[in-house]
Image 1: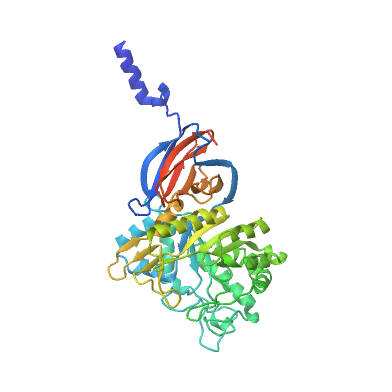
Image 2: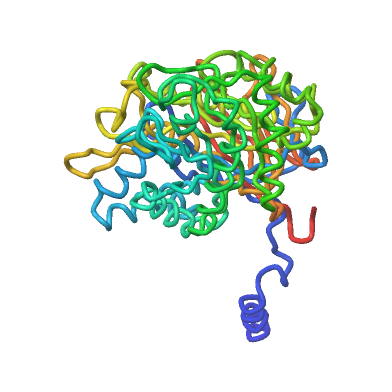
Length: 479
């Protein structure tokens, strides 16, 4: 009998304990935590487990993947000229590889999967430039002197390394200005697009997309103009009113992309939450609307709920969130974690954003390099221009709670619990079926809550001001 028991034990070890009736009964939940005092920074915690029940008297989050919303393209930032230059020129090769892995690899880092790329100079550039700069008084309507040579030095190599680390990485191109000779100001600074160059400027976009694609970098989307209602005095910008944007899209940009056989999306507005009338004016033009994929928003003015107003008015059009920056004006880690979680990771996605992006991916210890604009902005990471050391900032950890776990192609799914006193949250289901719950405790005290799913639940506790990500996979064969 003793030998028979040994034989059974050996068989169990060979074929697995499940064959002997001791399989795990409940789904396991992996947990990562960030606390406002920085004692935990996207740190793996002990696993939890679903079990029976879950009291109706407890603070609860109910998950229902049967009710799904937008498909996610990704989380990320902008690869500005300044960011790419710092990564390429201020880091030793091994440190560069290390940082890029922390940014773009989903295992070693946070798996950034979407980048916005300025089409020419922004305020965070080493110089003012476009892809077709000419001496004063000259023009190039056939774009014979169009060139992305500037980007070939360090922007494109850095983007290619990022895409090698994360093949799912997508790019959005956004111009701060047309070439100066196309504008009423005859300069990258100020002015608006001259009517006689409407077609030329559309072809400028076509050439940008084609040359980037030839370099191995497909462009998922473009916006017609970064912040069309902000015309700065010290860095490139260009005024573009809603009616003008609609006219240009329907007569020039839309047909140009279509005639070139490009499937790059057109995403309008690309400015703050407080002027939702602008994208609705553009989308109200049916000829323009047929070329438009959606609306992009920035978070410097207004409320995130504006995204839902546009989505409700035009439900067949997508929403994108494309810019918000941290900076020296907001030095408290916990406060910044709270703002990003409430307004961007949870807020923007609950209000239908397919992308959620910060501004500069990397800046130096002085908030540069820059040529005007924001004097004290902060990047997702800070690179010391003298030593080559880098610092992962609060934006890295806040965004990592989503970007590391929510894969491109995931769907946002129904989750309850935004009423006062609840745990603020958003949930997603990945293409592989796994479920991701991102939660934030905005209360002034530690809070315990239950997560209920398919008739079972797990109990979790979050410190005040802390963020957590919970990930689980349905049992094999379950949907």
